Length: 212
Image (cartoon, rainbow, N blue to C red):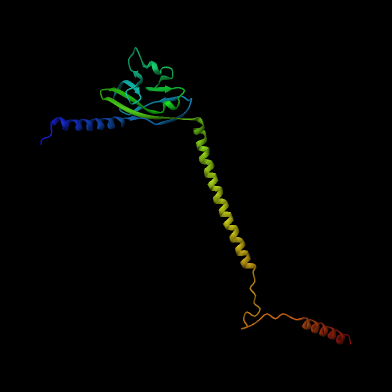
């Protein structure tokens, strides 16, 4: 069974388009941005191609919903779409400024550079909008966690050193009982009351003899 030429052409077209998009993006420098609620954000793409003329730059949500555009004509410099003009304005170097951003502004933004004679190049910027509390508490949370772990390590290490010190001190001050250690079958002799009286009488007798 022979494949129809049209069936082979479609995958080839898709493959060529994917390569074209990948190559085009390598000629544009774009950086993802994280912003807080209520702040203003400037989106810019830097064209890295030399010896070319920028004819127009379009901004959209990467889904063909247009936001604004720049044009290099003498009579106009560009325009923001009316539905976004309350919060979006044109910026220098073919960028746009979004004021008072909120969570709904999170998403991917595309800049499309139309140049002569090299054609079009597309760049993508991902904008993430977070709450001010998340932005400010995040670094302090990591710092606090690190200090807490460090404190636990220091306390545990100091406790181990303290236990080792007392163990060595007790081992040095403890004296072994050497009485009868070298005598086989030795036993501890406890003096009786008679022995004590006998020793006292002997001492008294010695004192009398000495005085005589």
